[in-house]
Image (cartoon, rainbow, N blue to C red):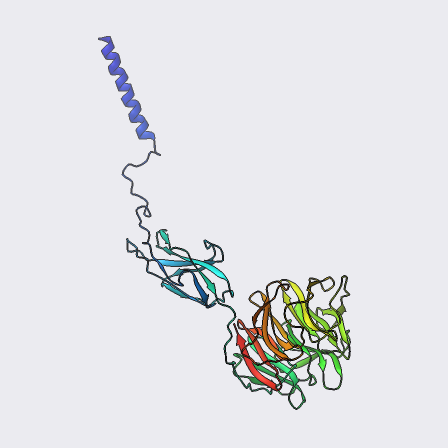
Length: 426
């Protein structure tokens, strides 16, 4: 009897303990709680890429991507992200939250590059589905058979200068087929229609000068006026009204030099005044100029060469030291120079042009000694490849080139006749 009472007592204690624990535990899960709203969501269904086709080659540098609709089982709204990269699989987000199944590229892709792309379809509940990865290779530089214009409004000319300034092309000075020197200034928004800003700028008529854009101004440096070489420097904020920064810079009068903007300075390299120079001058304001003496070997005294800024370096390409050259030099400070190559595979030449476009140095035409219309490029300044030996424009020298609106422009020059045609390549 005593044993039964003991068991009943212990049972009652256990029941009270269990009841007490259940009523005091506020952290116990609710057995009938509703699931999280995202739980149970179904991601968009699988879908295929349509264009660009996997493995497609010679693709335009502004392609259009397209893909199938990714249906959502829950009827949720679906948006799309495009990933585009030279890596495989692609990691770089190219465009996001698209509501359509196509995307027209406005960004200029690289030339002759292999890209990988995919699309991720997303619903509004964090569900997503990835497409397969496709690859494609872009085309090389495109060379139309016809110029932008065969006869621009400005006079045919050679040894002029050209810059890109305030979203326009500007052509300045030079000399024309009656051998008269020019100090006119022309501008264009598209390379087709040209407007004369001034027929006679405040600086004297000249050829073999250089022009750069610096401190939000166009600058004119030196040149030859038909009688004497010059070392005056002028600038303008609008191309019409010009101010003389100095009548006589610290460097001697010269033409056939090159000028670039590099490390927040204007640089003048080489040139000619009856003899060639290999001096290197720079200025922080266009008024006061300082010569940088070479610490190491430097390019020979020369003129009619080209200079560009590429890979955070300043480059000098070909020209003449009384003998035509095809060497290539670079520096990071103006004092320490390295010869990238003593003999590039292109012919020794003068009066050519060079620009930087699509992470390459490009070289166009020139005289070697007869005029050329070949095009060469390099990704490192050492190794050079020929794009063509016969570009659509005529064989020429003394032309001008620049980069404008994601295109390379070749303008005017001399092919046995003075020219005023305008070509564009992208």
